[in-house]
Amino acid sequence: MEVAKLASLCFETALNDALEGARTLAELERSRLGAASMFSGVYWARILSIQIDAVERALLSALNELTDLSGKLPDADYEAFWSEAKGALQNSISQAVRVAFASVVQQMQSMGSHSTGMDLALSESAGQRTANLLADLGKHIEKRRLTRQLGKTNPFDTVEKGKAQVSKDDSDSKMRIGLFISYSHDSHEHKSQVLDLAQRLRVDGIDANLDQFHSAPPEGWPIWMQHSIEDAQFVLVICTANYKRHFEGREEGRGLGATWEGFLTISYLHSHSARNQKFIPILFPGSSPSDIPSILLSTTRYQLPRDYEKLYRRLTNQPEVVAEPLGEFRQLDPLPPKEPISAGAMQPSESPAAVPLSALPDQVANKKTETLIALAEEAEPFMRRVFNTPARDWARTELLNKLADKLNAASIYLHPETVQRVWKYITEVMMAKAELEAPPFQIATLAPRRPGPR
Image (cartoon, rainbow, N blue to C red; front, side, top):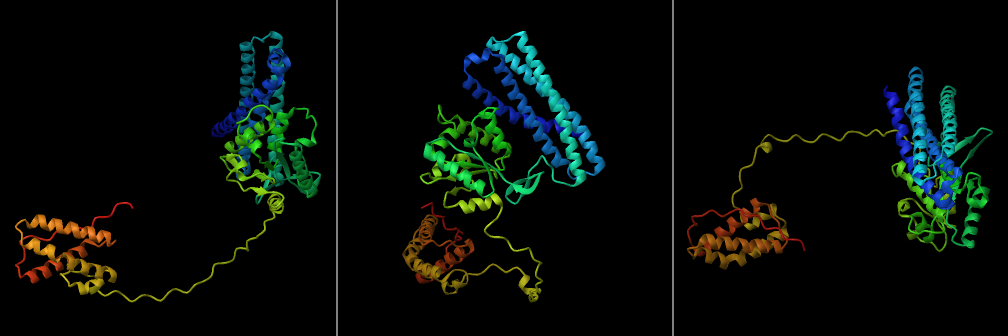
């Protein structure tokens, strides 16, 4: 039961992301065909097909996630896992197609283009697609089961080797690296530069693909772009100011291809928690980092033709620097033991008595001691006023505040105990000079006030 819930949750999560892209694609299709097409059965069949394509993508995504989760299960648990997951996915597929069909019929009714004939045709199409998806589901699960038994790499997944993702061709053991180039048609010169890059990559063994190699894909340009990006291990993003505006949806009109590819890129990064090893910003001469779409600014960029070799190393997983093999830990001798602490040193010390300023270097830095001596001499007239006035408490407070300000100005911050020593010593010295008896009050322990921000 828990496996069924897990499978349904994986499918629903993937379907939400896929339907978001399907809605955008339907809007582009509506803009391309015009308002008159909404009364055509062909148009509504196309809209239904877009939504069912999203169901198919969600199924593949859920299968890949469930494959990862079941990879380490024992054989008996593995079979039970997929048996339960298959039933849950079958129900999810059927339900998703029914919802897609009902959504299209509702849109037809709202547009006033609904008819019984259209309903029947769309219902038959939805039923056929459902049957195909359910059949494909069984094939996918069976191939995963056989792959596990044979101990081979899953043919539906790419195998990550370092930073590059590669797939194996059944007819050839050579590693294939698929790459798609996303760019805007800024000028004939710019298109020529992009084509030269694609051709050079192909000569160097990279299966580079771009729109100039295709005149009219049968599935239409939006679907072709979507499949090209999904199937590629890497996508080179040729960044220009014009491309960035279209990528981020800040410019309408010509350049819908770059706008659509931008949406596909953002959707991919959103569904992969912003983790990016696929989309690579490329700068041609005349472009600058400010032309890179904001969502790709944190990605390593390459300035061509200067960085072509670095780019090629990344695509083929041939780093410039290879780490040394991990060695064994070194054995280190222990340090000699420290001498034991005497019992007397562990006893708490008594409160220190007043000490002369000449002994203060043990508690204060030398330069601070010199400043304190100067302040003590400067304090003599203030102290005489303290001892010769009946308002001793007020005068004492005034004196302490003045000297605390001077300490702050000299950037001297002392422990309260040290401050107490200094004041006690100054008091005793001033009293001896004035030949006065000790005052009947206690000198307060005041820490210097911290200066405010400068």
